[in-house]
Length: 356
Image (tube, rainbow, N blue to C red; front, side, top):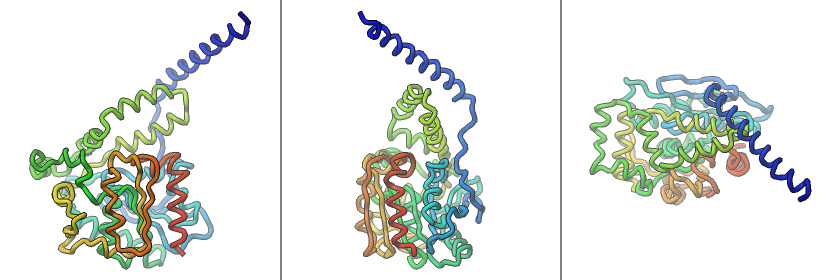
């Protein structure tokens, strides 16, 4: 047998041993090191009121587009998914493309904020944010970009305040809640006593909501931990895993009355799809939205299945409207390598053509 034939398996075994040792050493550091720093793009806080935060990111280019951009996060999660780390930040990408970027983010509602409702978000928080942006920029209108249920809030706002919206973009935004099958099962009115839950807890605990998300993919956490163990030797994989794990685990509580309304009006009665939803006594009709509209859906979205958002494009009244269906899942659509290569450039180009 040639020396090379003998040395090949020895070298392979040595490489695997070194990888195993690296994995074990870094495994120890994984559990003892601090959480990664996220959301660090320089910004100023314009509004800090109760559960509401409005951020203004500092420009990175000399010339900016006339129309500012407002990112609207879902009330269940923190907005740093839009601003993970340099090179993996939608905020940074938009700033470098010349946009004036703001974000409406949320903190956990405190016990006395259990009475917050859709009216609080649509008739108070969002109008206050848009008005503050107008004061800051001198521009009367804004491009609104909403993610998941932040997209639902953006739709509701735009339907009632069409004159303030220059452009509207939503990602993975449901309108047919009968297609949110796991959530519908979890909140089935025959078994789920939403009134008892809200009356008992006030605000609905984040842990309960996290468990509901977990049910959508019950083996995902175990599979993720296995992938982590297999890749502990890879610094970039571990860094990315930790960022997404931190965001995924940081589920916020929901204000009790807001949760009660969401369950009754959307999960049970599907009022948004049927044109029966009212906010503060005013009907929500998505056909009144006439600003340029973009919706981006993910082919493999386990949280908002494609069928749940499919009717949206037909409900919008805009003459200039477009839907893009991209590969990926609910989170990878907006953050990570897939987003950097596909969704972010598509969004920036779409906004650029409509922001002068």
